[in-house]
Figure (tube, chains in turn brown, cyan):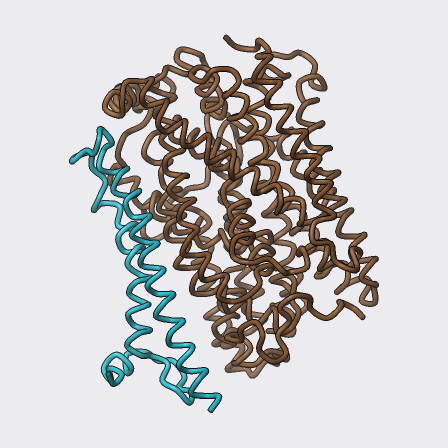
Length: 543
Length: 93
């Protein structure tokens, strides 16, 4: 069963992969703007996307290998506790609704392309904006790494390279090739490539989900049987830990972890540089709001896909194999149950579903670097063409960084990659969200809070060991004072906020100089078409 | 309907030309907060029964919240948009 190349599935997979690559290159010509060398053009698609394209874009980076591989794998591994991803995506939308329209307005009013642009304008602090930019870039890397793990899982199950190969280069070659393709088309066409491909990806994913969620339970004898078998499998005691493998519900002592993981992930979701990019590429403030009302469709898909984890257990995937890599469970389930040709389509959906977000994420991280580190610190007079060139190079560097993550870290619990990124990105919440609603916070206090949160979060994450890893083995730990186990990211955020509040009170009492705020109250509520609002293209940067 | 004075005093937000807290904003706020209360209170739904087509309560309950939360967010959107239009219309003339 394992490590035989499935010819039909592989053929179908390669067909879709090639089709998408060609589309990526053609995308460069889609709705082409006058000056393709402008950073807004390459990095934001000219900021002219309406509700549906924005929806696909947002969906394109929200629902990824995380959805298809990491979450079902978490459920496959431990049961109910992995389902936190569903409440996470549900509560994310009210949060979006509250703060993203304000970010859209102020950004379009002042021509901001990144959240760091906004921070610099709002607080007049280069240090703070660089801190936010660095956090965004660092936090994006493990998230991209997660996508690569997803692609690798598919290729592994397809029999291309993978687990038992002796030569590391042969083993990782397919991954490197897929990666090269992604890098090349992102490099040449910017955000337009992923936007167009997102349509294909979503179409594939919808088909696969519809089939999977009807056909697989049918083949396995219905949900009753699936949950019964899964319940039995989870009740078996793991000889290594002396505890049952998992559970179908969340026990009281694990409920804090469940809730804090959901809440922390929801708060983090729209602060990733790529989410901000997607939001800012929307045509109007109301496009953002309208989107939050249709995005939950994706949550439903996520929930249905998550339950594939139980189906993999019920199907006996990985049963009796010592140290089975849970990330392979879903692709393996597809291969076991679907006819080869459809398994190929399903694998293509997973593969492309990982490539698109990886492209969007690396572009966003690159934008951040160019605008808020390269230009602010080193070359304030860089021309738009130079900015675009630097961005393109950095987007490659970021991808290579993620590749290093994949090749060097344990990837049997892929969801940990995303949660690690979450710990870091959450530390920008007080600055960004705080800044959108109030200017009460002092810039130095925010910087100190950020540093405290980053230090605490990284230290605690480093401290977590798992049976397979000495460090970075988990993302939950005891919450001081409360005494329950909770998501480190949220604990660090609370510490961050507390430091920011206390120091703001102190600094204000000392009358420490606040930076200049170039935004005004009304900037946060302007809509497209109003005076001074750039709906399509903001003023050329640096011109 | 006049703005609810009691609710207005509870909020300590700076006062602008127009009141910050209005009935429709309060309603929108409730719509947006409801999913948090329901879903982060894990103890309220962490059980297996009643099942629905064989799916334990824990799972279908959370999935059922997806359309409910979407409807609530949409309600909030309509409320906020209507109010913004009224405000902009009032300020322009």
